[in-house]
Image (cartoon, rainbow, N blue to C red):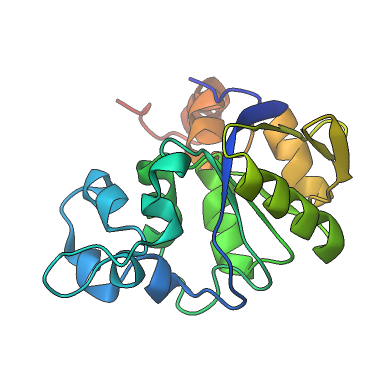
Length: 201
């Protein structure tokens, strides 16, 4: 078993504005008791999307023009706050497969990486232009090119940055530690046998 290399990905974008968007805003604490992560998708940003009676607050994620968006664009310090892995899970289960922001909280960034959800950094002016493009025409396709560290949209090229170790993990399909562990099963069994332990069933 091994992961799939992630060199490029594409999809339509949606801009969720705001600095310091924390994990409690991304997925409220009351949803942490879920039985499976699949339940988290509909609850993404729930308290800023819906009133107590379930009526819509007309959040950008519920704008029909952005239905099916796969690339989330935001601002500074995205994913700060508590280190709940439910936040990146909610993003993934909602259908978003990458996040573009000015910076990310470290643990949130790491949790996204192991799920195969790239967190890429783009400077303010370029990110502002990208958000304006997507806002004016939500049908535009955004291409995230991790190999060449760039984002392409509407024939415009935007520079991005990704940690070297994370970029290498995506390109080499080693971002999921469980996949990496299982890929080395034969070597693990060999060491276990040499040490006198039983093979993994």
